Image (cartoon, rainbow, N blue to C red; front, side):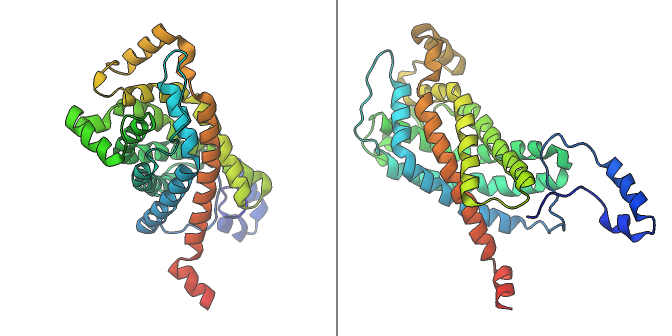
Length: 322
């Protein structure tokens, strides 16, 4: 992608003899941009299947790499949020449930990016350039909704194994369904959406807008370390903002058949009454660290994989041979 350009009709502006006058008229008609935007020049046809395929591959790859690398930090965060009062957390079995979790993370990440990328590109074509942030927010939310049908059962099983309720993922699925029914696999679904939809939308919007702004300043494409730093900042900031939502989601998911909390509002009320408002920020340190590092790895791997797939498309390979 080249440097940013003003949204001008260059053919009409310079074809006539009074080119300079027409150019000034066009400049005055360009709307003020309240969000970062970029004009990539020549319009490329929208290839839904190609964008979907590349998004699925890149998203699945990035999700697996992040989950494998940072799983112990996530386990510590979950155990901190699950404890009450001055309880101590166990530091053994920090990789409990990793294999089963990867079985869910791979399709969930693939689905998310597979929906996000074509939705983002379609919305960017439909909306004015000054509403690019709306496109990123909306695409992030759509990706989150699509992935939630895989993410939630994966998260329920993972967190119950992290808190040592089950020894293996198959046992977790079997016992949860037998005791709580199929709906037990979707425990805390509402709180999951309450946390993840704004998280996905905000994180990807911050990341995309920062990348566009950085490109504007640098007048070039970003390299891998720069993508990683921007991803880390977007992840850490969004993780801190959404920590209370994450605490609520964790409590609802790990309560099992005890049904201590009757819903999101009841969960907040009991936590604040019994443990105080600061309990809603439990695990914020590991969460910000985990998601900050995770954002760095995820977006770094995502952009590298997308670039690799783009460079190895059949049409690009044919051009290289010519």
